[in-house]
Image (cartoon, rainbow, N blue to C red; front, side, top):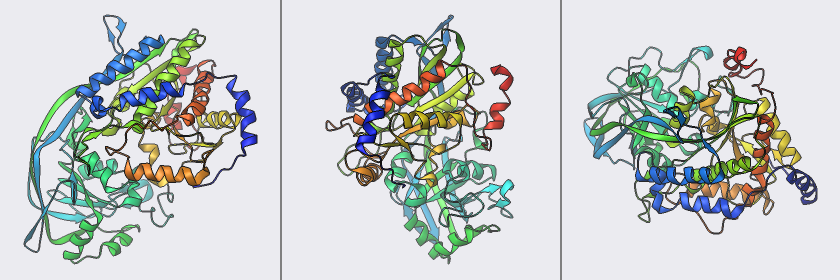
Length: 550
């Protein structure tokens, strides 16, 4: 990660000038929001649980208190505070029976240990797979524009595919997929979708910490609890019946018993022309029931109507959900509180909304969107973007906040991914005015751009970014910032230990939020339309609706 050094003297001068143009934020108020939202009483804020009901009551109560208006679904000609989001909820009933059979010998697998199997999202109520052949499909990529097809010449019907996580370029840093930066082909969501298109009954992704960008605890906790998806007309077209992960050591041992060297096969998979390989005398069996039903969760939507151009909308967004109640950690804790992820973003959303409510009415409308089911695959934002409350063509931009640092002030900041746009340029300029340096996504190989709610809007052409706290701390520099980040990812991210701490100062958020406020305020009080960079894959999508922005 690039080190960015700004002297304390140089930092202090622009901060004083900058503060005069933006509201001040209260650390105690931010801390209290995070404390309440991540308390055990909210049970991890799982969608369609009592924790959701408490979250809605709290956040809507804060918006009302701040003086905002409801911006959600229309009912009897009036806006509600929420947008209903129908979701398919599925969970495995009891403990699943899972096993490999190699050379005639059965090897039972324990859910959450060697394997993490997700509840079926294809509409199945029962999974009963016996001795399905297994095929190693490399990175599980079919990219015609890159002349790459890991499925060439193989029939996966009735079989289980095994794929590596991330892109073929991850280890070498060069090749047909743009080097270290992850493309969408590296995301596990894509790999499941492609497996379904190829006719496989299942796909197991091999977990390795570096290319996945998180450890096995995160995989286990995220994939062995209740699953959600948007309600689809043809779920089987994007979901194979079995979707899961296996530990690297488990894969290495499986390959060895099947007469294959895992590392050698990985190297072959990194080259164009790789051919899928059937694991000799190795099969997979799975048996479990699925409790599957359609439920309704809610996005929260608060609004300030514009004074001159109310049909043009600037969106601030954050997700309110976390993982709810799940498997116990080593201490027996089963509540995944989600303090950093994403009570911090929700707290920021509430307080930015409060600041706008106190300010003069903006020329354009501003929507404060607190979405559901981000942890289940960006589902709340995906639903909004597919069925927007306010047209995407006249949505100016989306400023997303996810997992902000509740600790000390930093000299820099980042975004999830570094897709070029006028919106990002404006944020960088505002940061410079505040004495802060921008560092491009320090871990592009993690695919962060595809993992936060702004992506649901970006892929539909709306200029969007997701803000990230910096790592060059005023107290301790990059060494302290990197250590804190590593500690969070290793010990807290998607684990019960992501809990509020009284020692958190929230000084970093107090310092950064005026910059995000200014970014949105400038857009809301202008007639400009930020655009994607000239080489962006999203620009043509945005251009297609240009006539609606005249």
